[in-house]
View 1: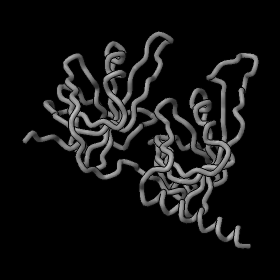
View 2 (view 1 turned 135 degrees about the vertical axis):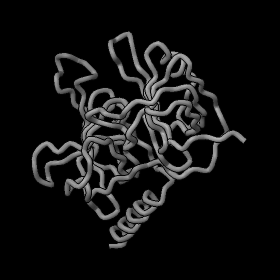
View 3 (view 1 turned 90 degrees about the vertical axis):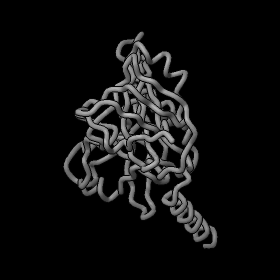
View 4 (view 1 turned 180 degrees about the vertical axis):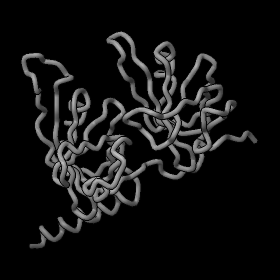
Length: 249
């Protein structure tokens, strides 16, 4: 039986890694209008995640080959330090594809959920590393109108959308989606829906608990509607109880 290295062991000082993981996120980052780099977030069966980057010369191939939700094995890749000012994962390293990298589809295996759920209190009380993107589970509501901050420009990069998200203890955080992501998220208006916000950035724009929000961090940020996790089920139960109390007045 083929063996694989846990993602937690990966480091740049060693070569010859062979990994297996589920593709939990794919996204494209524009370098210039005609060139895009593909990014991936991989999760292994232990719930550990790591970011991978595919160079622009290979991105056109892999964006049609690698899909979210699939399990893959990867060999012949590089490992570099995860040293950006904003990081997608807590892993100390990132994966870099090369022309020799081999990716193969493989069968799924039982796995621990990959969500790295941050508590609302840790964000409000400034007890969390703001340089790492976070996942949040909650009920979103009060979805605002799509706003063009520079209407004369008519550019998707100038779009913004605000909404709120509450947890199972009714703590509330403001949310801001910008650019193309703002246009994508307006579909969640018109009611209350339980979601996981995946890979959002904490923005503490002034000191104090009221002056904090979570924002999109480019195309990596996403929304997972109605995730099948215990935390989501708790919020659904809370919403049902509130509805019953209000209806039973």
